[in-house]
Image 1: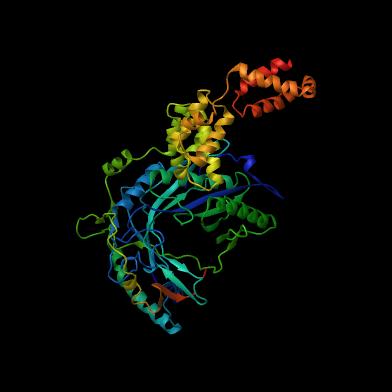
Image 2 (image 1 turned 120 degrees about the horizontal axis):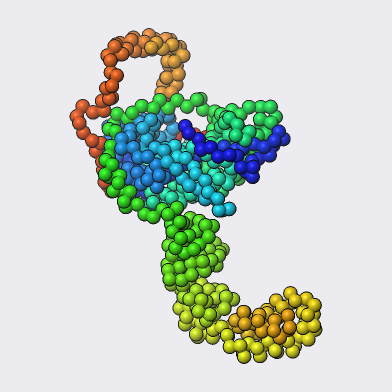
Length: 492
Length: 95
C-alpha cells in the first residue's frame, strides 16, 4: 500500500508527556447505494417499511433461491468510482464472507474481496483555512447490507427485521492518509458531498445510509506506524471527530505509561464521548472468503464506463473552481457553497447576472444563518432565489440601504411577496436627497450640543451621530451621505 | 495437507457444529482421507490456466432496477419457530 507522505504538520500534533504525537487515521465508509431494488433481489430498498415487508425469499435466504444482480447498482458503483477519480475494474468477482449472526440469514455476506469493482482513486479535501490535501482511496466494492436486530422489544429475546438485508452497499476504503480529527471529519464530509452530487448515495446519516469504521493509531511524527484500533459504525461526522480525538489520547496515555496497544475493535459511545472495547472479544475473524458459486464474475466494457462518465454531473471540485473563476468568489465561500448541491444551485440562480460576491454573502450569511436558526433546508426556504435576487437588485441600484435590505429580507421571509412592491408600498426607498438628509443632520446636531463638543475631542463619536440620523430617518438615509455630511458639519 | 484435531475443532466451531472429542478424532481421519484424495489434483500443471467460472461462455445475468418482489412478510416469517408482528424472534443477542 502506498501511503501519502505529507510532512507532519506541527499544528496537528498532539502533545504528550514524552513530546509530540501524530495520529494516523484511515476510514472504511459504508454507503448505501441509491436504487429502487436490492443488490440481488427485486425487493424494495425504501427506508422504514413494516417489519419484513421489503423482503423476498432471496433476501431471507430460503433454500434454492439464487441472486441476480441489479444492473443499476453496478452502474452506481462505477459512477462513484469515476467521482473518486479511481481505476474501474472491467472484471470483478463476488465472494462469500462467512459469519453467523441472526440478522444475516444466509450465514454469509456477498461481498467482493480480492477483485473489487473499483480500485485506487483520490479525494481532494478542502479545510476551512483554505488549504487542501489529497486522500488516497484504496478500493470501493459492492456488498450486501445485513438485517436489523432490535434488542429493546423484549427482556430475553431479540427481534429481527430483514428489510435492509440485501440492500446494496458500497464499502469505500481510504488509505491511512488522515492526520487529525479535523481532517477525518473533512474527508467524510467531502466523500458525502461527492456521493450526493453523483446521486449514488443519499448520505442520510440518521437513517444509516452512510456509516464509518474509523482506524486510528498514533506514532512519533514521521515514525513507523503504530498498532491500530478500529472504531465501528460511527454514524455522524461530528462523532468521527470525537472518536478520533478520544482514541488518540487513549492510545498515547497507554504508550506513555509503558503499555502497548492491542489491535482491537471498539465502539464509540456518543453519550460519554468515549470509545470502549466491544464486549465479546470475538475470536480472530476467520471469514473464509471464497468466490460465490452462485454468481459469475461481473464484467462490462470500457465503452459502457465511458458512457457513464460522459453523463456524470458536475462534481463539487469542478463547481468550486467554476465559482471562483466565474463569480470571483473566495475559495472559502466557494467551498462552503458547494457542500450541498441545493445551496450551490440556489446561489447560482441568485448570482446569474448579478454581483457574485454579494450573492454569496447573502446566501451564506443571511439565508443560511436564518435557515439554520429555524432548522430548515434550503429546499424549504421561505425566500426563494427570485425574491433574494430582487432584494440584491434593489440594494445594488441604491434604492434601499443595507440596513433596509435586511429588514426587507425579514419581511419577505415572514410575509412573502415581491420585494419591489413591498419597497414601493411601504416607502422603504432610500433617501439619497442630500437636502433632506442635511435637515435631519442639522436637527440632531442642534439637539445635542454636548455631544458635538465631545466629538471634537473624540472623533469615534461620529458613529453615535450616524446611528441617530439613521434612526431618525427610519433607516432610509443613505449611510454614505450621512457620514459625509456629519463629518463636514462636525468639522471632523 | 494434513489436519490435526485442533483444526477440526476450530472448523466445527466456525460452522457452529458441536463435535465431541471422539467425533473430532474420527472426523480428523475422514477429512485427511478426503484431503489426500483431492490432493491428487495438485499433480496437474495449471500454470497459465484461468480458473473456470462457467462451463458455458456466458455473462452474469442482470436484472433491471425494478421493485417486483417483497410484501410477503407473512410467508417470510411463516416457518420461523418464533415470530411476533412479522418479526423473527430469536434468543437475545446483544453486542
